[in-house]
Length: 606
Image (cartoon, rainbow, N blue to C red; front, top):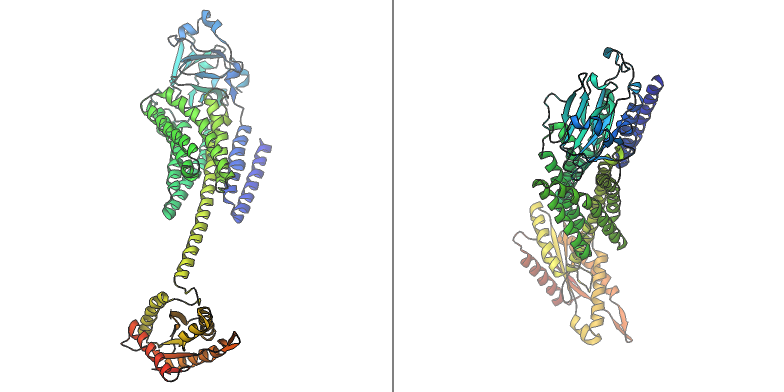
């Protein structure tokens, strides 16, 4: 015992150290996986190391399969019925529609139960209390369990439990069914266990240490607390994405996770553990939520993989599966348990295969967000296949098969969240591309294609805002309007291509001589307008002169052996208190024409 406890101390020290390292590196999903593997599993292993092992009664029991439901303990325990029993021999222990009642007969192995259980020993010397534990594959559909313990007078004491039996208020709630064994059970006389159910259910029967049973229950709550925590975290995360993007896939994922959580709550017996057995209602809820789980899972798949536009055939197939999932829920409400059982198990195998096929198809078509989706459903398919095959009696009931679906669902939720995060990134990228495209087209709509300057539309939008700010801040705002002298003659003599080239040269001169905060616009024809925030008209005049002299040099060129040199006339005005956009531009236009009337190639301030 001392060695084991030291081993546990080392395990915990290693666990705490690793948590610190992972928190430091913020590897969230790896951390959850690590908690599951290093914390939950070893705790269960170490607990079992510290106490006597579980005794599997199937290994020492005789089995009377598919007995007449009308038989009672008097007939079954009589010598003439002894031949109906045979060793279990690895056969699955089950009951259901086609075998509504079965019996187990066993004698407790007193030599393996520890001190105080030997023949003739005193009950007060017993160091360990043992429980008879029945663990069905579906804890809420095993209708009736009857334990018969022989009495000294030759009769039997009867103890009853099962999903169709109302909970005893004094009996502790549990995910499974257990019997506290009376002293008469530990004699060299056989006890009998009758199991019956209207729906197929497999089970294991164990003799378990009461202390171990309590610890195992606490560990299962801890383990499933992690699974339910993951599911709740995924719901909250999806809700955040839904509120941010209003994308339908997220709301389907929320309903899917809610259905998963409620189905696990019932199928794993937590509803029974929390509220006690509620005959009829528990089983109905099991089928309702497994049906909703299938329905919302397929709808989420259709939406996430965009099957309606990418693959019409898969869209219709999965739409049919979604409808069938709804029928499972309706069958559960109507009490058609066998139909709900059969449909849900076959859908549990078929739907993941279809979803995986659809995801593979989308990955091959280059839909990259399908990768995590594919991994997620492979996780679910692995667990779901094991769980469904257990329900169909192909695989035995054990810790792995009983919890395979739960573990698969937990990992599926994590990977689906990663798929949604990947989709979230893609949406962000697409959003940025769209915004960039919008900015590009907006830029084009406000830019003159010939000169590269802003166009008249931009001028009318931005000049008004600049005037408003100048008025509010009591700052100067100057406007320069300029036009090429005799531009019509240039076009007529040298052609419009040369005229356009001269206009482009003027735009270059303007850009070279103005600040980034100044706005130069093509007003129309050969006229350009520059508005200059925080610049008085005398300073604007100096800028105008720089542009004029720069353009004189810029415009020089030889056309067919003839020298061409264009000039410009410029009018400068400063914003006045009574100005509107129209009056401001009109005053600048008048100043420009005054410059032209003075002989051109000059600047006039008004």
